[in-house]
Structure formats: C-alpha cells, structure tokens
Length: 401
Image (cartoon, rainbow, N blue to C red):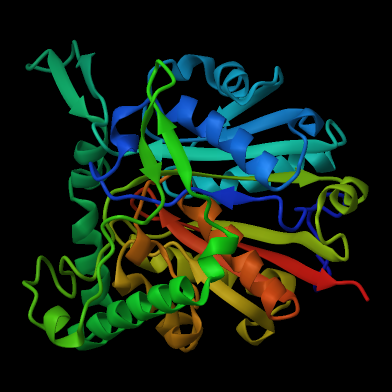
C-alpha cells in the first residue's frame, strides 16, 4: 500500500450523518428495562431524521452487538422494522472491537459495489444481561449456567483469568508506576468534562426517549449517568485491586447505541450537511499478543499498521481509543513513544463507560468530529478486545476548498 492510499477508495463516511446515545451506567436508566435491539432501531430512525437523512436511502445494514437480546435471531429484519423500513443486512460481533469492525465491514460492502448506502448500527445492554443454561454432556456437572456479561468479564477460557488480571499483568511487564496510571485517569476525566462543558458532545450525542412495549414513555436517556469527577488525592487513595488497577482507573459497564452510514463518494456529498468534507478509510490492522496481555495489544496493532502504510504518530491529527484500563494508555505511550496527554481530547470509554458493541463506534464518531473541528488530517482509532486482541484503523478527513 502506498503512503496515505485508501484501503476502500470508493467508500466514504458522510460528515454529520452520525449519532450516538449517551451511555448510562449499568442499571441507571430506563435502557435497563427494554429490548435493546428494538430501542436501537427506533433510535437510529430518530437520529437519521435529526440529521435530515431520509431512511429510504439505506440499502443494507451492518449490525454489531455482543450481548444476547430477545429476538436476536432475527437481527436485521427486526431492527430495520423498528426503523420503519424493510432492508436486509447481517449481524457481527468481535467483543469490544465490534464498533470499529462493523464500520470497516460497511466500507467493504461499499467497495465491493454491492450497495451505495449502508447503515451501521451498534448497540449493547449490559444491564440485566441474560443467563443461559448450557448442556455439557462431557463434563461431570452436565449443565452450566452462564451469566453472559459477568462470567465473560471474570473468566478468559484461554487462561482462566479475569480481564482485570490482564491489566495488572501488563502493568508488571512494563514496570508501570501506579501514580502515572492515576494521573492518566484524572486527566481523562478532565478531558471529558471540558468537552461536555464546551458543547462538543452535543454535536455527537443525541438525547433519546425510551418507550415500553405499549409505546408509553419510560424516561429520557440524556446523560452519561455514572460518570463522576475525581480528584488526584481521591484516586491515589483508592484500594488497589491488582497492580495499577483501582475502581477509578478502569471503566464501568453501561448501555447504549451508536450509528453512522457509509456510502459512495457521490452519495456522501448528497447526504452530508457539509459536502466539502471528505472522510476516507485508509487502513486497519489487528494483532494477538500473548495471553492475558490485552492492554498492550492495541499499541502493537498500531505499531504494525503505521509501519505497513508508511505513516507515523506525528502524522496523526486525532488519536482516540477504547481504554477499559488507564494502564492501556500508559503502555501505548511507552511503546509508541507518544505523549498520552495528546490522546482522547474529548473523552473516552475509560470515563463514559463500556457497553461493548457501540463503544468504538462512539469513539470513531467523536474522533471524526474533532478532526473536522481541527481542519482535517489523519485520524487514528484503536482498542482492545477479548483477552489479547488489538485493533487499529486510520481514517483521513479532508476539507475541499
């Protein structure tokens, strides 16, 4: 690949046609009580209307979620019906990489020439996640009950260890100082509150009403409930759950959705409120690192990606990630020799939560919005997933004069 050449030259993300719900923490909003697939379809319909994008232009859907929800078998037919349209599509999941991978898959659908406009809809509800009963005929227990969210957070089948333990193990490998991890967490919270107070998040996040099955209102989702301001002394004083990991330096479970559309260059100009802004897919990469070292995987994926396409961190105008642990950002800074103060200028999942499926979609939307505000350039988005996986992707924002 030539430097700066697009992996999907015929695919674009139309500026300003995206949106995300707020991400209220586990059990803190009406989202805890509804079918998240139905809510997400209805929410995308409202977001497209707000962005003045006729839903009739959608030709296909790529849906991303990771937690089972009632009627998940029906995926696109159900969700599109909740949007008020009849289109086909498919469901994909890749743990916490789902939100970015779904966008990349939509780019592939456009590049293949199959469609001109593809909707990407990602969502998850960690609240009251289902418990499944599985017959296991080759084990003495015969039957297991699996709590989908909490059992998977607490047990990596490849290692038998919890996700929290991988952060501690990575911190020990890189000889990280707990004080620096606390300072990263404090800085990330300050970035979020500054973005919120400036009005930046109002350009990305959409307040949404939650309805019950009878169509009656249950309440509004209009804040990232569960986010609170920290002080450095309060972070320093928190009990250490593992090396460099405390309640204040890891994310929290939450609920939410996020959506955007991917189109051909011609359709992007027609649908965007600012057709002079061009958003291209440049490249993506993924790696697996050694078991239980998930926090280093995104840094290794980024390192591999930059080397392959001939760009450097200095070429990036916006750098933003999915960081379930503040340890992730410290390791990234060490591996890439990059100042962690420059990452996540408008907030990040460490602060506003972790609903899995839509997490990296919201990260991407915020990153692209920030790049437009800065006048364009390369955008790096990266994150970790499922024990030891890292994903990284680069986009390019250009403003035509």
